[in-house]
Length: 285
Image 1: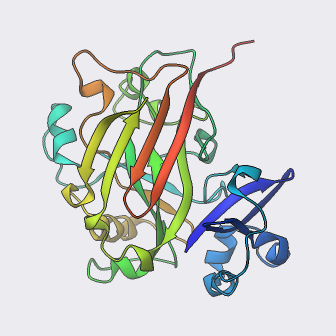
Image 2: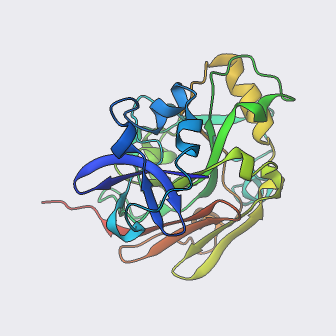
């Protein structure tokens, strides 16, 4: 099942993406669950499964995609330098523990929406990543049971402003420029991806593949990340762990490859979907 958040006729909603378009679950359930995060918090995903056989209420062309979890209360925990090729290209050593930072909800957009290259920098880099959406409260989770806490998976582009990222030892500034990242197009439920290590991740810039790696090459895999994060945080349904990017980023190339206005960047993950976004320059007036 593909769970989706969107705007239709000017109103935010949620539902199920199907071959014929979108089943608008929010039209029926919004008074009970305001969004997908509320559905997950209530453990009510079966309420959506009960709608799967219905005909689509509209086509995908009739909606504006939102990030699958648009709720600003959800945690967005991101993992840096978590693929060996990326570690090597950035001249780093393999970390002893996951390298973590956070993103704010207003730093990301949904599928098809513009990612903004800020006026403060020309060093706007792409980072295709697998996002893991938590499905139930998780605290002190063991590695062996970690995947039981996953609601599903999505695509993520951790658009990074490289010079601001390196202004200090913390990466907050470079990872949180307004609308610099993207998340979507939907959440594929975990039953459809029982083994995330089997997924293949590709990032495509203007039709050229710039990243291509198996998720199996993660230094700290999904169970490791969930187990580690839940030693210090209580993860709630709808929280997101963004698992890191493979090699091939623009900053690691000679010469560097930065995204420009007019570019189109896509993150394609086998069995999950394709997240696509145009790049625009920040409006300064």
